[in-house]
Length: 178
Image (cartoon, rainbow, N blue to C red; front, side):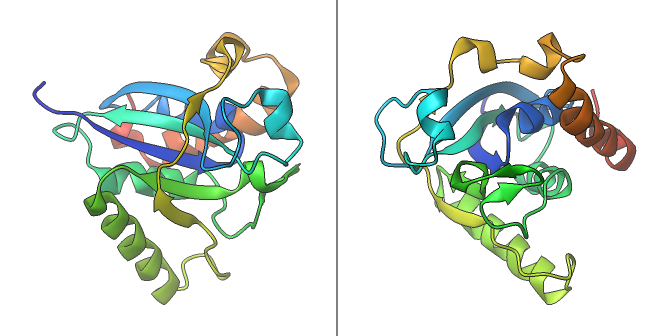
């Protein structure tokens, strides 16, 4: 592999987003973390208060020779609701917002083009509120959050929220599954 690409995605709870992308062929590394807020090295407890401005995110590194950014973003938009402002389902607060935090201008352009395309096609029937911003202030989440779904598949939240998202990915994007 000559080149990898990294992007940071906020799609609600990072356990769910990470669980889905662990299944995606071409994904090389995933790290749950916090970004685009005002706090320095926030803890999970601080982020949960909603006062840090940080979003729960995954830092996703992938091999563009195996999967392109467009496909990564298509999966991202499938497995969360980009029309919910500062929430995903029962998870409420700015830390659960929808966001794409780019590291290269090409990523910004593609994300904005895809959002405009979905808006024109009225794909969701409601306005898309996903923010598209440069990555700022990223910090890894605590170790116990990494690979959470994989290590805790029987945990109630994982069974009720993460597992259905993984199943939806498997059904819709079979060609991208590992």
